[in-house]
Image (tube, rainbow over all chains, first blue to last red; front, side, top):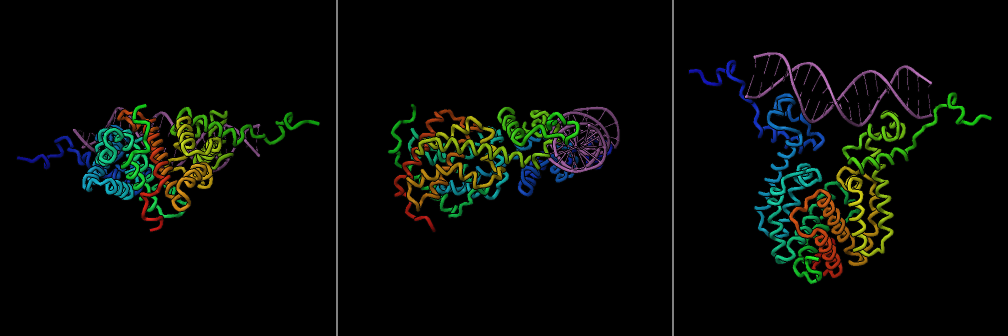
Length: 196
Length: 196
DNA sequence: ACCTGAACACCGTTCAAGT
DNA sequence: ACCTGAACACCGTTCAAGT
């Protein structure tokens, strides 16, 4: 009895590329050639196919970018979960990931990401927990927003090379971490209460 | 004696558009249609000319974006200088400007800006001074970096609509400001000293 | 000396036609 | 049922030709 493989002349051609292939190739191109180099054409070449064929696996370039972003978030989540849960360790893991995968990081944490917030929050959840542990429940949300704003802002500036005044960038990072930890620890400065 | 204007048939055609016209049109398009809508074609139509003519005034689309960014930084600088110099007021002015001109703000403070750092620093200089007044000279630089990282990160998230957990976003902003002010005021948490 | 039409290279995307 | 070539719309940019 003939196998499917020996019969390709008769059977409908089985697809030689999977969605995982496409996303994987896109991730590789993103890291080596940056976001601008991540063209449908480049992905097609990488997986050994012509550009139009990609639309069998992906509705859009935007769709592909979203899948790449989700894959990136998944590995970031892994990394965060693997830390001790200490706020300093979490912040360090976050920054390390960004420096290792700058283009993928920026894809996720830039304005156009449009990722489902659920996955984004899952990745950052350990950070929020660490904040809540310091502030107590009432100030947990504004504290978490302060921390994530600072971290993403710092990393964005670092990746953009906007820290050109010299000085010790690592020391500035640690200064920020310690300021956050200290401020969240005793919230005496915060008299207004949370709701206006 | 014939004026130049009455003689246009003979004189080399005087340019009907100026660089200021081009930059002004680009600023308008940026605000109304966003960065993606800011095409050379759109600018050309706005100033009443065909796209190739723009290259008489601008070497590149990148060049045009840089000019737009510099114009944006100039008005931001004005705004910052018009405040009292108090750190809370400066931060508020910065955020207000970003919300009034989100596309222009993002053009300047995103990864691809490539603006001369001199003008960028001029715009933020009052912020740095306010930090130095709180921390003293030794910690001024890391403190300023912490503050600008937090502010740009917060605004970036706000403009991207990434604050979807409900709660009071304005309160989170003020929580952050007060945490910064308090932390910079008494730097007791910062034992390491600045240089490692 | 400015402006223009035409052209080029390069995108993303569609679709009828191949196998 | 997947893949392809050809085509389309839309970019930025160049350049010879108009005035």
